[in-house]
Image 1 (cartoon, rainbow, N blue to C red):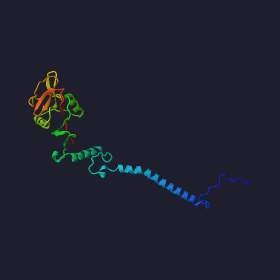
Image 2: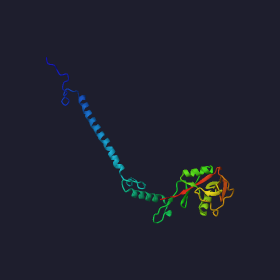
Image 3: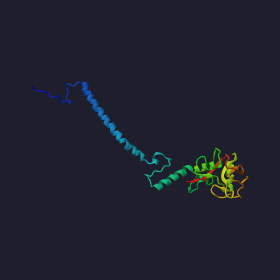
Image 4: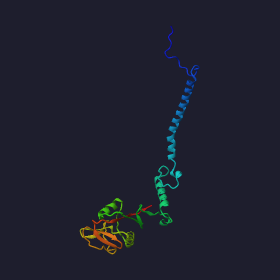
Length: 228
């Protein structure tokens, strides 16, 4: 008695007795497998194409972008290009010399005057709180250097109540001293009111007044403009 194999040979290519839907099913599987292979190839190619796009110099992608690209030029060269771009976009013609020496800029909401920037607070606090706020902004309370600057400050505070400046009485000696450590030039202006301990100076229109440092007033911060 001949014993048959438990697993008869599987012949797919020549299967005349297989139903038609079997043959169509295998053909569909082959097409599906080919589609999967194509998708895998596309997925692995995509990062390479993305890296190529990222290497395109910024100038080729946009015209007025001020960017530093260390991959396309020496670092000192890209910094100079960046500075030149800022000068073209930010410096007004009347503020730059014919040689393109640049200009001095102030932060947003700061008023420029000569080589300095000025910021007037919108809230009122003690003199010491105003001093600390200016320090957080990388500045200091106003230090008036000359009469022209005094006139500028009087102009921008014309419609304000008293505004703190960086002048107070220090002991010993009870002398009016600026926050930068310099003494008040009495020929520039005098402070009306008592020069007592805990006295600070505030500007009011065309007067500089002595007030208690614990009074709530607005204040003026001052810092150097940035040259580009």
